[in-house]
Image (cartoon, rainbow, N blue to C red; front, side):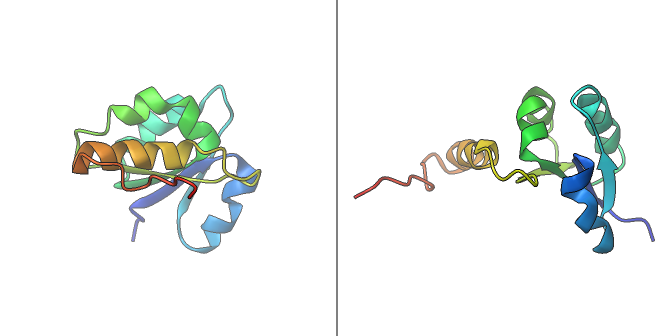
Amino acid sequence: MKSNLAILGDKESILCFKAAGVDTFGATNDDVASILRRLAKQYKVIFVTDNFAEQTAETIKKFDDQTYPIVITLPSKAGSNGSGLALLKSLSEKALGVDILNKEDK
């Protein structure tokens, strides 16, 4: 049975997902956008490491009005750069009309 899940990122960050049955696709900065467009035609859920999600933000934005694919950002092996949280904040504000992720220090 073919998986409906894929992950796109640098090879070191995505290797562990292969053991969980997720189809893995290693990429470089030069080819990540073209690989993402190809995966969007084949998979319903695509995980993208946040360093590549930030780089391909315009491509990911094109999927907003479609049912599939659902693109979810994850931290890479280097840790989070904050772009995944920023995307989630933007989408939640768009859907709910309010910032539910506001983290003000009190």
